Length: 90
Image (cartoon, rainbow, N blue to C red; front, side):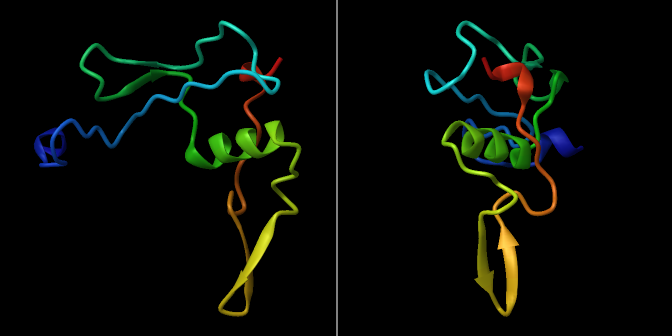
């Protein structure tokens, strides 16, 4: 079973929590929800590309223009995905 795979002590690879404040984050907002055992997202999942795009947006950086060159190709932190999570922004 997938949930019995050894991920290490106190590691839950399917979900995590991030606390954000200031810089245009909507005060008192809880976005998303996990189950009682902290194993699965049950409401409003946010992909890591969306979290990165939201953080860059709060810093005033357009994530679609932030690139770095590696092995002859331009890469973005948010890859070809990523949209700022409007529900978390004020």
